[in-house]
Amino acid sequence: MPSGLASYFETRSRKVEKALDSLLSRRSEEPNSLREAMRYSLFAGGKRLRPVLVIAAAECCGGMADQVLFTACAVEMIHTYSLIHDDLPAMDNDDLRRGKPTCHKVFGEAIAILAGDGLLTLAFELMAQQAKVSSKFDAPKSKIQNLKSKILHPSPSDCIEAIRVISSGAGIHGMVGGQVEDLKAEGIHINGNRQEAQKLLERIHRHKTAALISSCLEVGAVLMGASSKARAALKSYGQSIGLAFQIADDILDVIGDKKKMGKRGSDTKNKKLTYTALHGIEAARAQATLLVQKAHQALKSFGEKAAPLHDLAEYIITRDR
Image 1 (cartoon, one colour):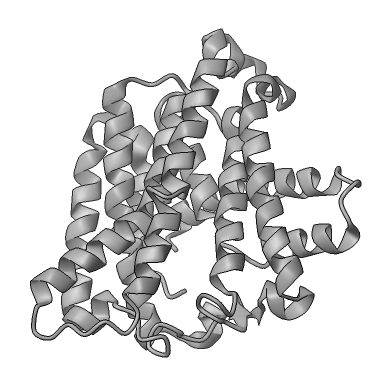
Image 2 (cartoon, helix red, strand yellow):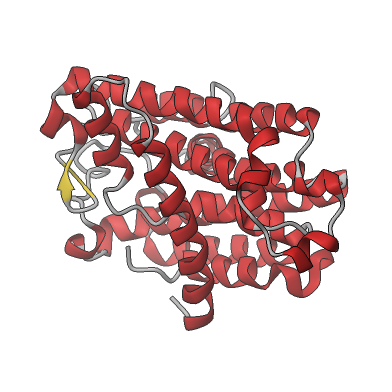
């Protein structure tokens, strides 16, 4: 990761990490095994890409990280719940995640399922609280004086719209629906019809991966009360990098260093339909590059404020884990 992007990512992800730790530590009524399983997966070494995207989008629209921090934490909880369930024997049946035994291998399948459920429902509780918690994270006075009060405190209507956006990206019209299509496509035979297979593959990953990523970008704009044009631009950027991210994942599943990735490549084992299986590695790389170019175009109206997002788009297709 380039040094400038690494510094940007570190400061934002550290803020998210601290908030997540506080949120999971303050709750003492849950059974210990449930709380431990939730923490185990949430702090298993994730990149924190999605919460940083929420923050970067908010900053593009004139806001600050503290104003969207609960929602940033919420999307990381949603992402983590999806990984816990994705690893279960009924789905991908993975034993390792980020170099550690998967949640169900440590706590059992029942607790793993409930830990995922717990993270998902806590996420929506946090998003509902976003309107009244922004002021708890103190911003510098000099910055406060230059911001409108609405920006400092996302309005209830903006928070409701943010919940709708994330629900759509994570639910049956997004990530969950894409997972179903992915499962149904396992072992599918292309039989020479590559065009149809390409359409199916893109539909799967527009839902399974890109929908939540693009929702993270859009929701940062929503909470800042940004214009519909800004929302659409950030959503378009998110759709492009979401697909590029998935293509990069497919490539790494074939040629990546499994020690760096912290997991075994299960796509081939499960006979999944992937970009590399359909097109080969070089053609898949070319497709990812085109998507990144499209992502850059979507950010033109934001100028220098979008510099971290430009850098991130490039990093997504050059990363090694």
